Figure: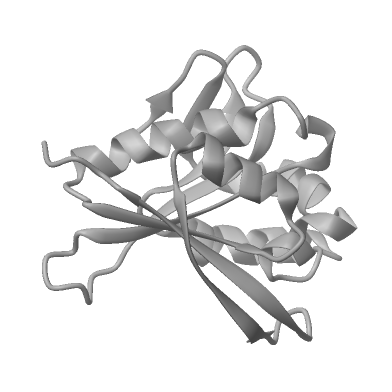
Length: 173
């Protein structure tokens, strides 16, 4: 799998040894709720994530380039049902101790470059109403607001939320 380096970060594949650090960050009560999943309660939650959705192609551990310390997660999910597989979405989170450092924007720019390499023409980024940090990240990355969907059910957290959809059109290579 691809490793992506930025000035301060390394985006790399997840590994089984990431479970303890992943658990420590993902057990924070706000992280999962901002992403649509429950905060981790047991180390087994981290192991399950590592063997399922974090094992997907183009799912990356976001680490500090200087130390290798885990700071979050970012993934590019290409819609294979799209006629040309040219539409993708990104999902990300940064651990609470690392908020406010611009890591989501830096990782987001790197994943946008990766999407261009893969021939993606449109990237979708969604965030919940009230998640001003993700709204700001989407704006810094150049996404434009497209729509708002109310009363969307998120069964993992037992809530219905309003979701904002933003899009970024990538120039043809």
